[in-house]
Length: 235
Image (tube, rainbow, N blue to C red; front, side, top):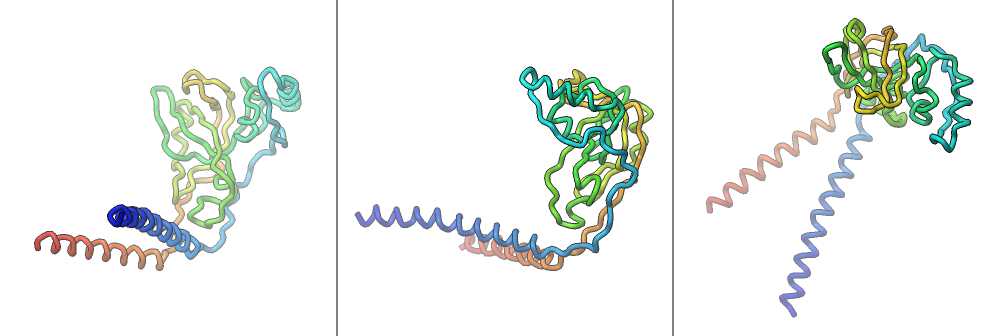
């Protein structure tokens, strides 16, 4: 009985200690994030965006909501600007239409024989506030569409976005394909025109003194633990 109780006690501690340590780590990460310095506010909103062709975002389902698709197509003039949210909520309404689309080139430019693929995001981080590392104000999720740029267009992009850089904000005109076979059946804008609205910007985050101090202390603790473990092993 005593052995069984002792085993249960050890098992309980084996569960409590890691969970407690995990809770401390999570709390520490949250506290460091909250204490992170914020750069001076800068207006990074993109100028020169054309008005949207359709203001609202109406969802639809094929066959069930055919009238919604018809209504959107009748109210949309080919060549007007759309957002990725509008398109994803009712892709059938814009399929095969000429559209204008604006957003930030992000990730990598995937070059192929006759052009290149690029992801273009049109969320608030792309068109209004810039990368999160600069201001740390969350503005929803990343949203965008895949864009095919033929030779002669993708070469105009000088920088793509990542965690500490806003990529070129581009305005493209092209045909929207809801099930592009060249993109594995994905939704794609096949561009015919491209204009750079805002050049790429590298963002330098403020130095986080507390984070650097904590990292140094943790590194010293890790080294001390390794040294101690080796000494114990030699005994």
